[in-house]
Length: 216
Image 1: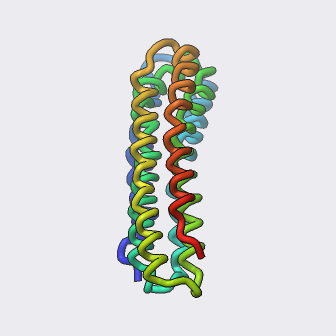
Image 2: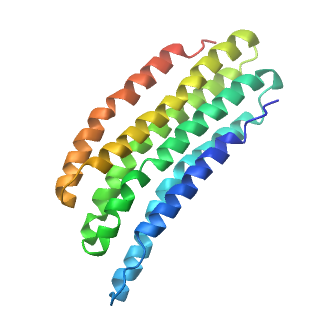
């Protein structure tokens, strides 16, 4: 039986709460006369940012659901997977909030920057997608009844423990976007180039995790 499987959902939900708060505050309606059409457009854009931030929690729920039918003998591996994925999703969800406070208020004056900010926010989210892929593969391995339980649990736990590294990469990407300065066009180009360079790290981590996956 898994004791910490709720972390699949709880940790990304905490991250969503943090990002939702930062997004709401940063996109607060400024004082003065605002075109009602712009106000509605900004509310719709805020909803898009919140939907994007909810993805890790949705993926966490899927993994949690998939673990429900696993045998209790693999509980330690499920616990490690829940913690590893939970931390990866927490870091991924919080990462965009590192630069939202600086960039979202400017959308009231330059609404055309919405797509650029959203694109930069999506880049760190690749980390939770990689973590989800590894998590799903691990759960598939843990379902196999013919393999040694001790071998599966030990190897799966070792791989699951590395998932938390995705959180560090995502937060690094968020920080890089935060310290990148300039008008939205310049900021967008510089941020995409820098975040793409950092993206090499999770790709290498994904390859390494594939090599560590237990065989069945």
